[in-house]
Length: 466
Ligand SMILES: Nc1ncnc2c1ncn2[C@@H]1O[C@H](COP(=O)(O)OP(=O)(O)O)[C@@H](O)[C@H]1O
Ligand SMILES: O=P(O)(O)O[C@H]1O[C@H](CO)[C@@H](O[C@H]2O[C@H](CO)[C@@H](O)[C@H](O)[C@H]2O)[C@H](O)[C@H]1O
Image 1 (cartoon, rainbow, N blue to C red):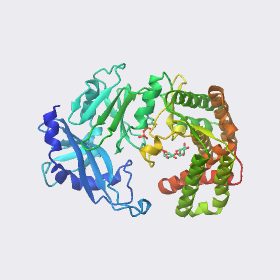
Image 2 (image 1 turned 45 degrees about the horizontal axis):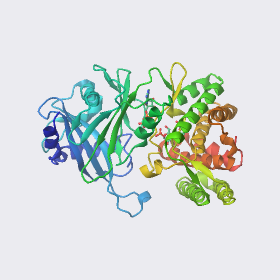
Image 3 (image 1 turned 180 degrees about the vertical axis):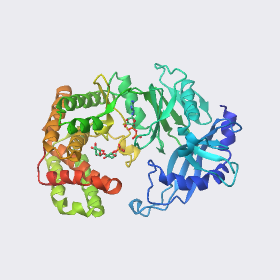
Image 4 (image 1 turned 30 degrees about the vertical axis):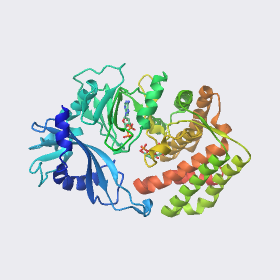
């Protein structure tokens, strides 16, 4: 890999003459494509970097492309430049049968006319290039493969693509490391690298410490783009969602695990508060928080009419928060996980819990995701998740959720020295906000699951908080 190779690729916007037509079809079909429901009307090249020489087979091109789409109503009349996506494109004459699911298309025009282009993460040869680049701290054009000096990466680790549902795309190397290639890219420090780095440097054992990462410094943009994060793979781990469902199916008690999860969450919060700034949220900030919750409720009720009968009672939850703040109550805010649920917790075979995926809610801006927030927000996310598991069981097991929720809070209290239930108004507001978000999420993505958050909406609007 050489700078010369990279420049050659990036100076060739005609690559899109070849790749544009197949990519316009292929992109909207990807799970991680954020602009679903609107056609891709054009693509523009942000950067192109050859990671394997253009003359060889396969050819491997790292691409950042902007997808232009007609504005969605949600974006209002404001013109939007289009989301930027990271792609790893393989090019071969003919695709071997094992790579058939990776096919993107056969360009008809431009420099790649007549060749086959495919999603290169399926190709172990291509995936191996990424790990080697991190191991050797390669610099290829504007791409910087960097790493944490303390962790050694040995050669010869065989890559395989992670096949489970996810928002980005990951490759596992020899059950030793996992590389997450972020798909929708925005400039700035990504919390999915920032927070695990801070936590591991703080000695917090509750996150797999980042081993390496990929960043790009692009012309005309002050902030770096964080493109991928490599971390140790927790071998044989089960995620909390899977484990909870398994125990529920056997009518097994899950409170010991819920308590351990509460402790792990509090440990992460403590370490983050120790290293990163904390701020006090006074009346104005709490009011703004409650107003945001009320606006999201309005938007969700417009989109999902089933919410409408409950809207007045749910609004009063947020009004109570504003009233409480007006009495002079203040809360401490700090960096938190931001999107915590059972699926973001991994239990190792020895029973240790780690938290993963610190990216925050992908629909929010990076600035919002990096803002200090009350820790109760993460607690509310977990409480919702126990409720989710219990209500997706057949038959639903609400008493299982009640026990787990109480155990999580008591585990949290042991480690944090503060019981999140002593903030009932804020906790209920965050839980309500999350349930409203879930109603919208399920209506859009998994309509069969809508009854699960709707059960919580009924409970919360009736003032039942356990
Ligand atoms: N360090 C790890 N060790 C083992 N498995 C992991 C690790 N990190 C992630 N995973 C697995 O990969 C899946 C996707 O990871 P995640 O960070 O949630 O990606 P995404 O943001 O794309 O949804 C997780 O649900 C988990 O099963
Ligand atoms: O996985 P992401 O971090 O992208 O989060 C989105 O998808 C989640 C589902 O995969 C969704 O979580 C909801 O369902 C979970 C069970 O599948 C449950 O554990 C969570 O508590 C519930 O919120 C999440 O809301 C959504 O943002």
